[in-house]
Image (cartoon, rainbow, N blue to C red; front, side):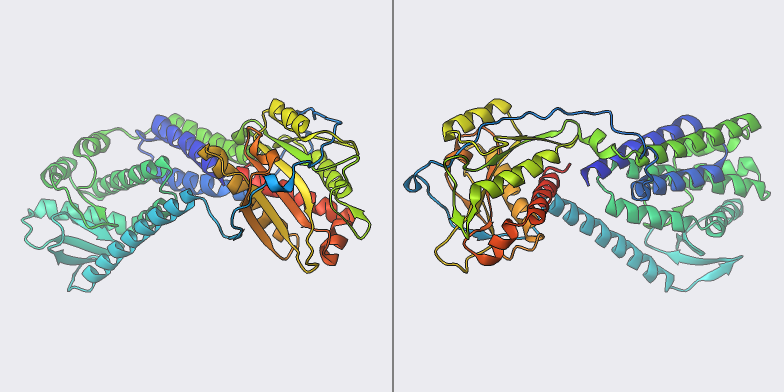
Length: 480
């Protein structure tokens, strides 16, 4: 999702730059309207239309895998470990930024609905036809504006005959060319993508282009250009208009007068603009089609150390003739085989050997990883006990503590999808998660003493699936 946000900001920024540099001062208003709306929608939906143009080309990024042949056992006495209260995992847990986004988006949607309701109320007033326009006298605004074929004018207006004819011609253009649809679309998009600054610039540019187009068509209809210019000056001093409407005196007077008297763009310039737009749209598709786009935007790979608990003389938990050390080693090796340009996975052991806990911690800290996951299997005297658990250390370092807790929650949530029945996360002070310098999780991937969990953990295909779900959980939590 973060990659999508970055992509839309970059692509919309490039598109807007093309508009400002090549199109904004050209009298190709219909083409400009197509460009603004078309490029806006294309930039927002292109990532969902991804076509892997370079699928046949292998990635040139090769990340060497560091191997460590030593193994480690959990030698910490049980009396040295304290546990906090367990908590059930909320699978719908979201980042605080998600809730900030929702609150602001809801506020903007409510404002949009309020404005729409206000316009609906105005359209219920009495009106008079002037051509195809329904003219409504309103006290809500001292500006002239229109919404589809409804035109709102101040109730106590003092327009001259020339001014009134100019206003009618101008608002008729807005009505015929359905500029209101553009405005509603932009309002809705700004409610959803409010965080993107270019949405607001697109909105302003589109409204300005509407006014330029209406000015041009009004003069072409037979109205004297000088009289029309005077009308713009006379009526251009108002500040407030009805929201969601097209307004005669909405855009800066100077810009409209300059554009009104400017010569029509040459054929060469129009052709050049079209070619530039085609190249831009092609670039947007190519950019969104690169299969390594997420990797490019996300930067360096996340370095993760996978610690397979126990090993060698320390078998860990044993039940139904199944050893914990063998299961977690298989899962650790499967995870290392998934190492790629997104995750650089390092393991503390690749075979059945024993290494002390202190040696293992020293090795982990030397790697300076972004995350440590110590993988274990659980056991309990109650043979019905089942499910997955994750432990994190309540470090005084808030960033490390919050990251550990986040990864704990996401990882057990990911394993729940792999058909484990229960999941909990708990604070604890296991040495392996306390003494490492990085965010760390001790992950219990099921109970060997439970026959259902045991069968699942002892199945090679299920072990591969568990590794894949852990990998997916890391990606999800890291935003990769």
